[in-house]
Length: 329
Ligand code: SF4
Ligand code: MG
Image 1 (cartoon, rainbow, N blue to C red):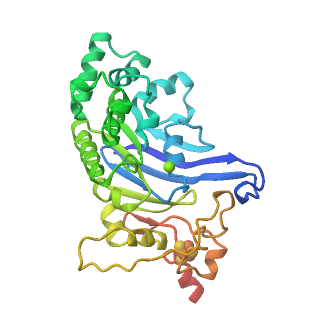
Image 2: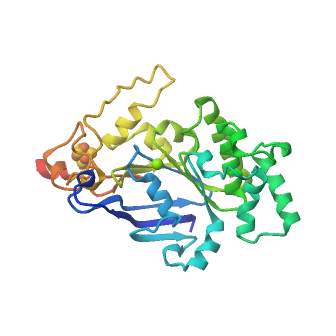
Image 3: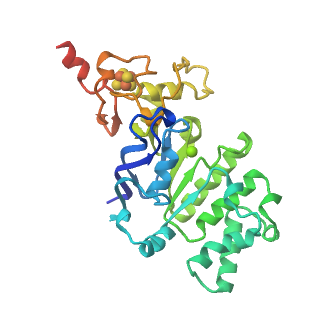
């Protein structure tokens, strides 16, 4: 199939003490039964507010943390079933770029060592071949050869993220999970790093899962976007449908916060009421009902399923699933 990755029913629950984060159940459903697939060569956005479970989903699907349940098919093979040894080999194909490149780069090592490390760990090539590969990596992300003997603290935030990206490329992966790769950078630097990621995608045929907390960052880079709220995906569609015809009230609220350069497109800012509820004690029914401007009686009782509400457009909301019509009938 054209899918590089298929995620089916992924869950990540954490045990917590009762009372913690208002927990009544004794666990937090950080990721609660999400399913999606990523096509080869595409950039798939996973977007939601802080605490919605998007980073946990990204790490779980690389098995950097163990999922509680679900299947993760990489090129058709369920990686949740792999042994530790098989998983180590599989990791070459799936790499991560972190939000904060500074804390993910070892401060005691030179850039040269940092870029060589994954190849040493995975026993790739001999010393001379690895050095040549390091030079190439530095070159493709725009670092000068003379910078290879420096340490992470000697670089700006944008340059450190270039180092983080180069390290992720060292094993020639197919999939890169990028967890808010530009959120910690100045706005002026963000587009440079995003442009670099797009160039690298074309050059190396990469597939990206791009995690972000707002919809403005993913607007230019993503082909399709999934919006998460309290551990669940509430809308998935291609970028054009999402921005032109958002359906879920939460997506509409997130989009209303995206700056619109075109003055002809008037948008009314939707201010959501209340705080995001604790993921340890999510509301029953539609978990967004406590903040939704369009909440109805049914929303407090029944959880809306994620349904195909328009061509290749999936939404979990009772406004679109026929519930209202059946109530009126
Ligand atoms: Fe709002 Fe109801 Fe739709 Fe949930 S199901 S988003 S509460 S209208
Ligand atoms: Mg996060």
